[in-house]
Length: 469
Image (cartoon, rainbow, N blue to C red):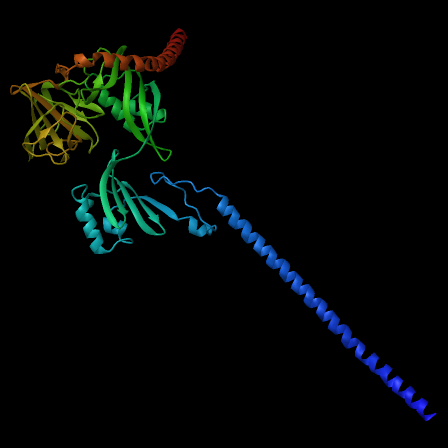
């Protein structure tokens, strides 16, 4: 009895022991399964990396290496894309006009030390002295990452000064200003003045001056202009950054004055450009018809005129051109300055000596032209002074006199001979130039002539109707 009870208790203890140890066994099995799974995943990952590595290597090995021509510029290749901020270089251009009193130190002092600016000025002196910077002239400064790259200054309408920094060195030179050229046909009827008529069609006074200069030997644009006159021209217009910056050559022009037609064609005759008529005769004459652009002739050439200051009758062997103070006065012909003086009667005066025993004098000037002095040679059209009222003068005007062999002659009656015509060996080429331009010029002139004729007919009809009434 006791033995059975003991056996039973032992069996129960054994059974109880197995129930207690069962959860531990399950955990160990689960852990082993997790370890196996992790190991399996690691093996798969390693296999995948090995596969990718071998594939990349095979691709590189499969690429055929092309020989590089060292004379051909090859594009840069980057293994990894660079950030956008590194690829793009920040550039900016500052454009402005020189203000009154500004110097090169004011303009470039932010980018160079005083010693460096002195060195730049020294280098620039034989190219263009930097102390000659003029107020109103355009300039630009180019920067890269706020570092100086270049400075460009417009010396005139044709050239600019360029100061560039290359590889740490300063380079200075003159360059032609780059323009975009467009050739256009323009023209209009002359209502009251050439300046006003050209302004009415949206063109600048610069073009009016060029037209006047072309026909200056044949037409006096104050005394000769009449109602019904008109002009047409083929003009080079110069654009810069999309903006009209003036005019190039007037390639051809036609002016109808009091029913008489004047033609001008631009041609470089053996390297010297000038204007010629349709037959190859030069428009340039020995003397200009007038030495300035004036408003009216206030006093003519006469042996008896009442002097408004001296209050007496005396000869006036000159032509007085009334014009605003400061109007430029031009030399009527090539010559040399034989007198530059001031006295209480004549005020500021210049006398020029010309070929063939001619002399001309310019009196009552407000001031003299730049670099004008006794002995200097001047060319026809050079500015020698400016209109004023110095000396015995009641208002701003130019007292203009001409002498032949020391005797006074009427400036309005000078018979001037033309300059040299087209050289014989250039006549065929000139004829081709005329043929190319004349048709286009004539087409524009014909359009304007029809407009003028129509307007004049309407005016006449209205006049007749008024008279009838």
